[in-house]
Length: 158
Image (cartoon, rainbow, N blue to C red; front, side, top):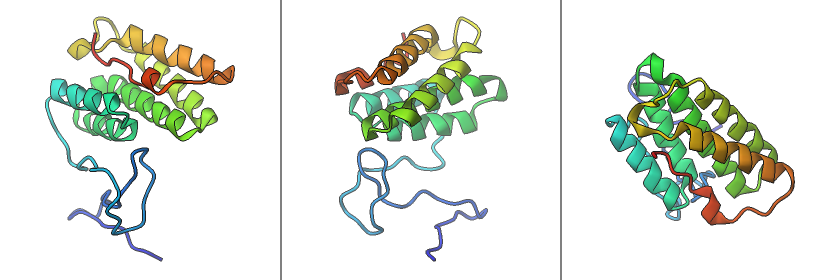
């Protein structure tokens, strides 16, 4: 059994290389993409901008990690916003990987979290647009529609 890398408090660290879709590669592989630091903590606007750059580059898994880091570091009253955004990004990751069932589930779950955010959403997040994006994408996936890669780049901020 392989042991996991851990930080000084004993929490597991994400040090294994991953491909563009976030799938683990063999340890020591040089083929992976740069990951997101486990302890990433930036101001919200920078987190959103970083996640958007990653989504625009087709790196939805990495965008998910950025948004998940924000979810961990932001106040409790912002939890649904950041959790919903992270779930949308991982939903897109599942679309990229061809996992329709997982994609639909996470897109709908992310939209449900965003539905609890009272307008106006903090940091200019386009909650209404993202809910629509998630619902339409989930519906199209369920109907068996072909999804173009360009469609998997939602705009986080209006």
